[in-house]
Length: 182
Ligand code: AMP
Image (cartoon, rainbow, N blue to C red; front, side, top):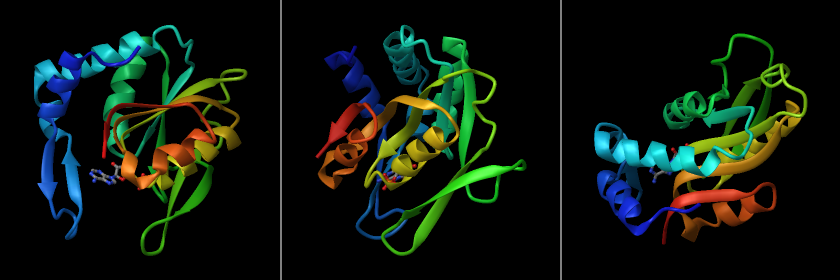
C-alpha cells in the first residue's frame, strides 16, 4: 500500500525546509512541524499502520534519533517490540557496531548484541525519517543482520533519490519511501 495523493500532500506540506542547516548547501528537512501537526502526524502513522499490519513484524528498529519517534509509536500500534539503533557510545550493555563513511570522516552505529534474541527468526522493519546517501541505513541494516534479525523492509518518510542511497540499500533489503524528492 502506498500513499494517496491527499495523504502525500498533507504529509509533505507539514515538513519544513531549512536552508543551509547544519551547513551551507544542505536543505534540512525539519520533521518537527509534522510531529506537532496532529492531523498530519495522524495521517502518517495511520498510513504506516495500514501498510505494515500484515507484515507479521517482531521488531521495529529505529535509527537514532528521529527514527525513534516514528518507530516507537508504530511498534505500539502494531503490537511488536522496538529496538534503538544508536550512535556510538550511548547503549549501556554489550553492543555490536558498524562504521560508515561520512562526507568527511566516519561515524558509527550500535545495537545491543541481544536486541532480537527473545524471538526465533525475528522479522525486523528498519525505520528512519530520511535516507540521503544511505550510509546510516546500510550500517543499520548490517547490524540487524549481525544481531540475528531479518530486515524485511527499510522505511523512510523522505528519500533524496538524487543521492543514490535508496538504490544502494535496495541491494540489501526492500526499501519503502513514502515521499521521494529529486
Ligand atoms: P545518510 O546516511 O546520508 O542517508 O543520512 C541519513 C541520516 O542523516 C538520517 O538519520 C537523517 O535524519 C539525516 N539527514 C541527512 N540529510 C538530511 C537532510 N537533508 N534533512 C534532514 N535530515 C537529514
